[in-house]
Image 1 (cartoon, one colour):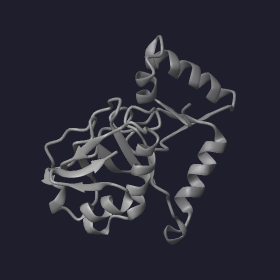
Image 2 (spheres, helix red, strand yellow):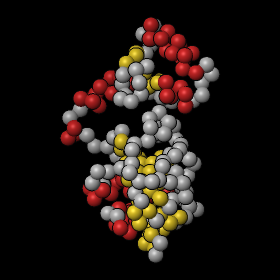
Image 3 (cartoon, helix red, strand yellow):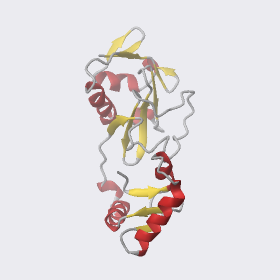
Image 4 (cartoon, one colour):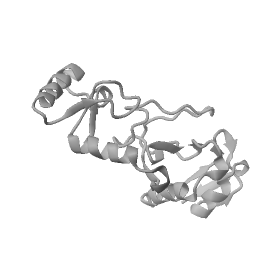
Length: 190
């Protein structure tokens, strides 16, 4: 389930005995050569354990030339274990008043280890993490609408992005192109 075992992962899984019992097990596995200890992911603390193949893959990704990297945005439920924010890592800072949460019905879009978008439960509000919002790739919104299409009965009106009316944001056109419909209140889905 986890490629890297950390204190936060153990706490998130409510493992009996907590991190001390898991750390004892991991140290035994480390002594036998089955896993290694290190600092593989920034922000997860010093006690991280992983198999050698996982570590090798992380090293390959770290040394790969930046211009050859292309990450495909992926949308998933905000409470999915694959979403590390709000669980293993804190949510990235955002100046908007909306506070992201790991709730059923909320979605995130991630790419290349970065959180790009959060759609709140109920679909009325969205956060976008991007320094220059006008440079946000259409693929981010296509990933979102692909996830939304999995719920054929889902209907909502998106009214705000980053505390602004959706119509006043550069994302308005991108969201329409991705499948949202314009309405007097904002953008309709479904």
